[in-house]
Image (cartoon, rainbow, N blue to C red; front, top):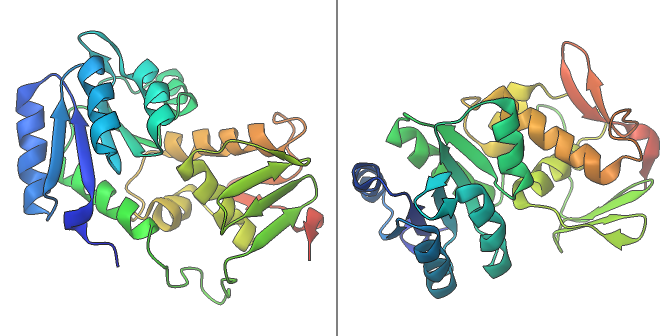
Length: 244
């Protein structure tokens, strides 16, 4: 089991009151390896020195954009990046995920929710009990669906023989569909079972991640044949292309 005291969290925000509040709540939640930076330059230096597991990243920083910083942070590892933002339009959310973000929370926010999301992320790193009634979860393995293959053990997505970069949360969502082909999941169920936050997330988060998966595995993302929308119910991965 992952020990919370071993998790390194970097808080990148130029508002001291927010940093102090988050540090206080996270320490009470059992996290002790906390680091902070108030600029893009400080954040880059911090990530190179500390290699945090989780980065809480403000989008607006004094010397640049947190969105641009996000893509640079990916060059030094694969931390879970949660945006702290006052912007909540679909376009802003899409840009954030496109730059490599995993999740976001809109200011003003409840710091307890931030702690809950971090704890949910940690649970994603641990072995899971089955969460779908009457469906047996397969052992870690390789899942083939026509033009794409997901290798769970290696954390790889291969499309038409080519390795395709896949952010962690996008990979986890795709993997979840691969383990339950043909099963329809609502947005709430996906947020609960993949993000692990009991359906407290924003619909946009799931929708943007679905879009990102389609952009990677579909021939025509606008006319999907693999990851399907079931109107009024949710999404499912078609069993038609599953290979045994």
